[in-house]
Length: 464
Image (tube, rainbow, N blue to C red; front, side, top):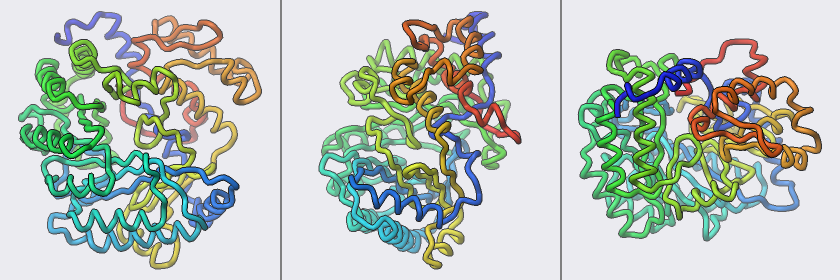
């Protein structure tokens, strides 16, 4: 397949809908959060949570920002630490944040989901991994059947580290690959021998990780339909439990290092779309994977595939999940959380992070307390993105009013999607068609009141 196999209709849709838009790992999205949300606001929110009669299980995210090298495609908050100058102090201060959080919460809460991301969490050595996990265990009760996951870079992850992680209780592991093609790896400054990934996958399985997953990016420099198809065939051969296939989010105004990637080496929008379509086709038809949401794939017997089938799939800052905990807590620089009715983001520099904690304050940078309208729209957006449908009767049951009455402006604006064959109106619901799933961000944007009423321009990556 090459881009000439796209029909004229496909190309028209690409040009029409390839606009900038949010990924909706939260609603309202992070650009709408406020700088005047403070430690006092967060503390008040935690007091509400701690005072609830029932103890709700939590999802925890720990951000380890360090990397030895900077990958040019990266959109994460990363601190390059070639000589490991910062790690010891950072772990010490994460301990302070965990302790301060626990004091404000007032009781030891159960945890059903724990995720370490980065950066590169396996930048920590074995003893540092054990130390940080011990800090978490002191302040929270990790449930016996909790999902405990970590993101790793195979280039800097040892079997010894994996053994420590597994012994601590980690049961899911995601390995960043991006592309197996050496030329693409060179272009993005992420040279990674495929054998490293294969050996690490085999070892992770042998010691009992229940889910071994791979992450890839399409739309990178030097990628073609043909070259990425070879990567996908390799993926199918390795048979990971889940696959994340993300669109390269080009945001050089936020991540200046991305400017080192030459526009001339990037696939154009038609080629990028064809790369994704062929990859998707191969994963489904040859690999037997189930497409989950807009950018994930899983084996049919994986719990996330079953959640899609029975409409219990959920979305949060980590992407798609089967654990819809009401409270998602972020620790570490730049981490993001949602507690009771508020979003919170931590400060982004080590200096600010250490300074806040030395002053006895949670290191809050910004946040937002959501309105009832935000809660309604979030439910609608997540229903579309997770289940590819919106049931009017479920809306009525949940919010006590008619969907048609609540969205008199938005509903007529969906007619264009219907004419383009992306959605249908049937059986008192909106159903997203197969091709519409590729443009789900555009459909969801119609229910985003902040985009509609924006006072200033918000910059996002392209939806395709």
